Amino acid sequence: MPEFVDSTVRDIDARMNELKQELSKLEAARAALVGNRRGPGRPRGSGTTRGRRAAATTTARRTRRTRGRRGGATRANQALELVRGKPGITIPEIAKQMGIEPNYLYRVLPRLQQDGQIKKDGAGWVPA
Image (cartoon, rainbow, N blue to C red; front, side):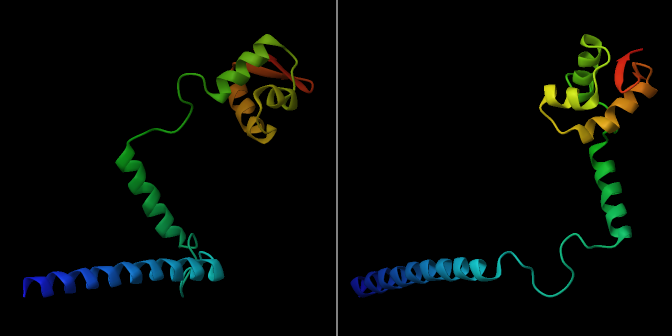
C-alpha cells in the first residue's frame, strides 16, 4: 500500500509541475497579447488630486525629510564650481560639461542667484 501512495503522490507532483509550466506559458502569451494593461476601471496614476495629496502627506510624515538642496557634491554645487572656474559660462556650456540636459540648470541657477552665490552677466553667469 505505501508503494501505491508514493507512486500516486509522484504522479500528482509531476502533473502539477506540467500544469505550472503550462500556466507560465499562458501568462507570458497573454502578457504579450495585451501588454501590461490593467483591467476595467481607472488607469494607474489617474487618481484624484485629493488622493495624491493624502499620499504625499503620508510619505512626508513617514520620511521626515525636508526638501531642498542636499549637502555634498550635488548638481547645483557642480554648476557653482563651473561658474567660479569659468566666469561668463552659459547654461548650455555648463550642461555640456556636466553631461546633463540644460533644462535642469534653468531651474537651479536662478536659485543659486537668489542665494547670492552667482549673478547673471549678459548671457552668462559669474560668481557674486
